Structure formats: C-alpha cells, structure tokens
Length: 280
Ligand SMILES: C[S@@+](CC[C@H](N)C(=O)[O-])C[C@H]1O[C@@H](n2cnc3c(N)ncnc32)[C@H](O)[C@@H]1O
Image (tube, rainbow, N blue to C red; front, top):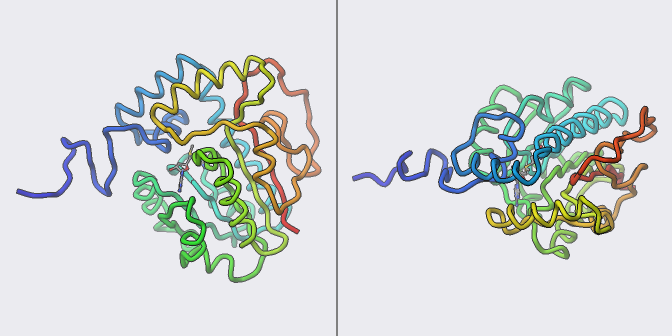
C-alpha cells in the first residue's frame, strides 16, 4: 500500500485536485492554456453559454497587464514587481514583459493554487531575477514576511504591486479593503498599485443582468467570487492616488499621459474593470 496520490484518485503531484475546477486553470483555459482537467472544462462550457465573450475578457486582461508592466518598467523606471495572484504561466508573463523593457527588473510571483505553484516554479528556474512564493494573499502579515517579498521591499525603491483578477476572490468586502491596504502600507513611497477586478456596474443595464446570471453560476464553484461596483473597486486603492482615466472597463483604460486613439465600443458587455495608482 502507498499513500502517494495517484491520477485515479483525482489528485496528482503537488496536491493538485483534479476533481474540482480551479480558478487558475479555468482562467488559463480561456486563454488557450493546456493545464486543465474535465471539471475546469465543464465550468468553461457553462460560462460560455452565459457569456460567449468571456475569452475576450481574459485576453483583454492580459493585454492590460502587458501595457501596464511595459509602462511601469519603460516609462516609470520601476525595477521591482510583485505579481500577486499571478495565475498559471502563459504566453507573456510579468518578468518577460518587465525584463524586455528593463533587463534589471526583478519579479516576485505569489499564488496559492498548487497547479500554479508547480508550473510557476518550473518556469522560473532559469531566471535569477524572478522568484515564486506559494502564499495565501489574504494573509498579508505572512506574505510580507516571505523572504522574497521582504527582500524586494527592503531596498526602499518603488515597487509595482499588481493584483490582476485576484481581489475579487475575497468574498467579504471590508476584509478585501483591509488586505489591499495592508499591502499598500508596506510599499515604499512612490510605489504603484495596479488592479483589475470583476465589476457589476449597478446601473440595471445589460451588464448587470449578465453579471447576475454569471455570478449565480460561477459562485457554485467559487463561492468567494465577488463582483463589485466601480466605487467599491476604487476604494480598494486606499492610500494611493489613482491615475486618469480612473477605474474603467479595460477597453477604456490607457497608461498615464496616454492618448485614447479611438472611441471604445459601447455595445460590449465588459465585466472587467481596472486602474493604476501611485503611493506618494
Ligand atoms: C483569474 S486568475 C488571474 C491570473 C493573473 N493575475 C491574470 O490576471 O492574468 C486569479 C489567480 O489568483 C489566485 N488567487 C486567488 N486567491 C488567492 C489567494 N488568497 N492567495 C494567493 N493567490 C490567490 C488564483 O490561484 C489564480 O491563480
């Protein structure tokens, strides 16, 4: 007899549970990723019935991430990044984007999904300016004490903290604000905070209707998922100053000082909003 996990039991190496969907794997499947199992694909299919444009949301989020990281590394001169809730490695990861703009950029990735931990560590083995911390972001004291995170912050240089599609996985709103604020308080002056978040605009329009249906389905698998209003998402930036254009759907967002080239489409059912801010 052995108590080693086997594929048949639904558990594979590193404690990965293949019997239930994982946020990281479902999201990665929307991006065309390969690290997924039948429960992930089943949830994907159910989401697609409600929101066939969902893969666009995932792609828009990654495009936003690329734009933000590139601007931070190339224009704002940031050399230290924390990608909190990093997800599975995908086509363009934060360290690749940042190091393309600035070879000396360092990145600490944080995630607590066992699939992400396994693949993230493997990807980063060959990059000595990149580290991966397996940690629960709802516990800022533990995260901030992590040696890689503590070392990144200790230099006192501005850091960019990215929490893309992560904070909406904390159900309690006051707790979510406390978590975000604990990280902001620990950042050196001049640091940046970049957030994307699932939004329910609250205007009774088509996106509200979509979110009601989507949320009812997705919270069956992920009970902590919380769609929030623009005001609530804005308040997660406490302790910072949000750059223009503020907290907007990603199609409307642009880098500080950037010009919007064309009118964003108005008839799109966007549910992901984001923004960038700076701590004085
Ligand atoms: C939807 S994915 C987003 C991935 C990536 N940030 C992006 O925007 O492309 C959310 C990620 O947050 C991670 N996550 C959620 N709650 C977390 C927590 N409490 N601690 C650490 N990671 C968490 C999940 O494991 C998942 O990988």
